[in-house]
Structure formats: structure tokens, C-alpha cells
Image 1: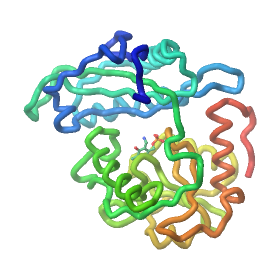
Image 2: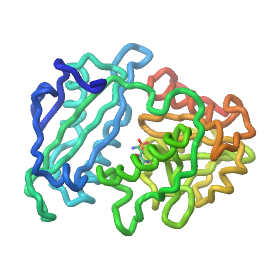
Image 3: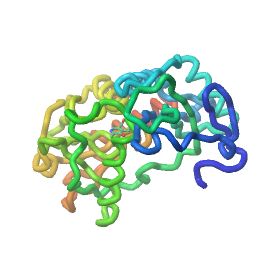
Image 4: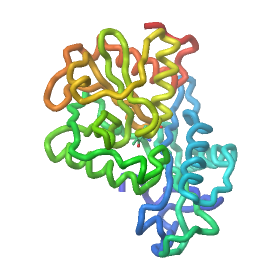
Length: 297
Ligand code: PMP
């Protein structure tokens, strides 16, 4: 497996154990119904050579909110989990890593509440999530889950069946990734990333409500603020996106990754001249702690 080998260590319910020896209960709502919550976090080797987890508190707070939204018992503290994560990284000799905490349910095949939850933290070496080339993105035939049927702002495992279907559809048609609309047909997000587009020197992104409001999205908004880039959060259609100058996805795994085309229509602006490219560089510098001063656009 590219994710673990016989030496890999993971964190499971307060203990550091070998991945190859860790067990889960197959009689779990998590396995059968997708009733679990998770996070996607990254650590980086910084410019000074240290290992730094990016925004661990934001991620572990979201994990708790996701668990609460799903009525899952949750008793872990941010510091406790951040400490455990650094220990798992060290045990696996990883600096540039993807970190995957998962909260899952004990044996129970009914739809009832559980008295406890289990938690695991897995880490693996980070490979580019969507590659490093500009993306050819397809408008998906799938919509994001209806917020009236799911707590869409929670990072719940079951929601990701939708992501898998959309991503597989795009790849089967020769695209790199999908872009999904919400249930009203407005642009929402990718299977695992938020979207921004540039038009006439400003950026646009869908508002919170029908998307997972990403931690990277929040970071991009902060960077834009520092860099003097105007951003408007509003609902927009695929047509507006097609008429735009440039676009990018952002997410913990994806970081900031530019688009080459949408539904086969290339963007007019060269990525290297786009606002997204400036943000991509600023983001990289931020996560690797290689700048002290915010860059200006
Ligand atoms: N939307 C979806 C559906 C996602 O899975 C992710 C990745 N967690 C994001 C957006 C981006 O969120 P973040 O920046 O917090 O990783």
C-alpha cells in the first residue's frame, strides 16, 4: 500500500500502534452507512527544517463540530490531538505529510445513538493531490448533497460517496477533476476543494451555506485581505465561470491549484499572470513559514 507498510504507526484510542495490527469492528455504522467524521490536515517541513502542522486547532475544532453535527460522542481536546499528531509524524519519520483523523462508531447496526466513539490518526507521505499541472475541469452531472438532507458543513464520511462519483465521472471522461453545483444549480465546489475565479481583477467564490467552508478557503480570504485583492462571495452559475479570466481550486490537499479549462473552454488569462498564481505562491510561503511579511499584489 502507498499509505502504510509493516513499520507504519498510527494513533488509535490513545495508543500508538502498528497500522498492520490495528483493528476496527466490521459491525459498525461507520462501515455500513458512512456514519463517521474525518479531517484532512497537512504538515510541512518548514524553511528552517522543522515539522509544522498547518492550522491544527482549526482542523481539530472542525472535527469536533462535525462529530457534534452527527450526534457522535466526542471527548478529545485540541491540544491532546495536536500532540498525538506530532508524535505519530515523528514515529513515522514524516515531515511533509497528509494527516487523516477519523472518528468512527462502535458495533451497532441499528440507527440509534452510540455511547462512545473511536478515534484514529493516520499519516502518510504527501503526494500532490491533483498533480502539479493546470487542471482541465468538468462541470459534473452530480450535484452536491442537499443541505436539507445532510449537515453539509460537516466533514462526514458518507458525503464523500458523492465526491467519489463526481471525481470518477470526470476522470472517465478524460478530465482531471469535477466541479459540482448545489441543488439549485449554482456553482458549489469540487469533490474535495473549494473554488475561486477571477474576473476583471477581482476574485469570486461561492458563499458558505451549500459548501464545506474550507480552512484553505479561509486562508485564501485572509491572504487576499493582506494582498489587497478584492473578493466577492456570491452565488454564480457555470456560465459566469466560463466567461471568467482564470480559476483555481483550494483545499488542504490541493493547496492552490490553477485551472487550464472548464468544460473544454480554456481560460483567457495565463495562469502565471493571474491573481491565483500570486495566492498560490503566498500560500506556499505561509505553510512552509518562509515569509515574514505578507506579499502585496
Ligand atoms: N470542499 C470539500 C468537499 C472538501 O472535501 C474539502 C477538503 N476538506 C474542501 C472543500 C476544502 O477544505 P479545507 O480547505 O478545509 O481542506
